[in-house]
Length: 263
Image (cartoon, rainbow, N blue to C red; front, side):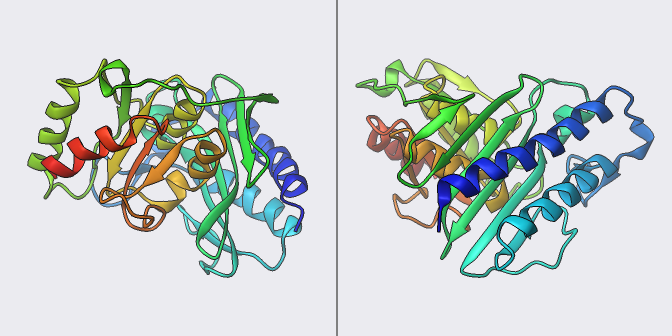
């Protein structure tokens, strides 16, 4: 399995979907917004059509692989190799014309990420990595930052949009991090959050009730950039476990301690 070749081919397919998304943003009709349950869980024809572009292209790269996708435009199946796709991560930002949204594609082997591509569409920045090959942004190798204390760090997060039964615990975690870091940011795209940790712009990211397709690509990109990814308890159930702590590595234990203590 040539993961480098697969990753480079994936970039080309992701660029086609990103170009479609970018062109549709210029004349987007808000009347075409749909709701998936809660009023903050939004989708549009753009998400669905972009996903179809990705599925068609990725099926040719690795015909034997399964698919787990946000919009369900293909039968969902988790095989030995499996594509996890979020065609438009940051849909709410896109719909409101807030320029932070992305296309995210992760390839799993036996449930763990081995290749990933994230395109920050408004910034035209491409992050990619494959297992053992390092992490890159627009072709340049990237590395995480190396702070010694959490107090030197800028942390990213996302807010739940459906499951609010842990809201109080979430607020406690936010308070603990506000008191012990440079600050918190909520950008609206988990994929971009993780890519920015890999690039040394953030030092950490955490989220509860997060979907696997949002983070699969970011996990391998961050790990290949020298970072660390765990679930809230410090284990490895972070892809499908619905909670994640991702960091530059050097402050991971301090970061996790605050999350676990308040959770």
